[in-house]
Image (cartoon, rainbow, N blue to C red; front, side, top):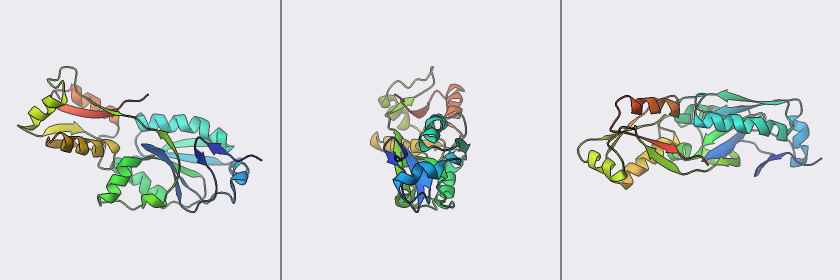
Length: 226
């Protein structure tokens, strides 16, 4: 029997949690089969959970549902279901996946830059070790873009710098552990502009209305999907 596989990730023996990557990554809480050749029979008639660490309706949720649509079939599983588990910019779900029972039936979509930066920066609430995940594949890698409200006076990074010279520039983000938060901090440091990162949005989609509602001096960092 041929080995079950998906993209660049091959299912084999692992003792940790498995992650699948993006800038998004996938990760299994996996005790898994004895060899890659056993993988298809291992998943037969079983249901695999794919954890998305953000609310339904956002960009990561789209990735998760696209992966689940095809990956379950590739594994030979009875089904792969998407479970949205938002909280703390992705840290809540990542903590839970890391400490889950390693039965091979739990996979998570992981925002790599966010969780690694949170771990290295000693962020409060990090209860995992990213190196101990079993990384099985990358879903996507994409450039970012800065967006503002249609009527905004901001048309360039130079405009952001000018505003930053008089006050903090407001930038929306889903949470401290999210890739957007890390990218925003790096961008603000690069252009030497003081920023006020507003967190607490459940999804990226919630940030756009806040820009339109009088946020003429607010900024949003978004991925440009190919």
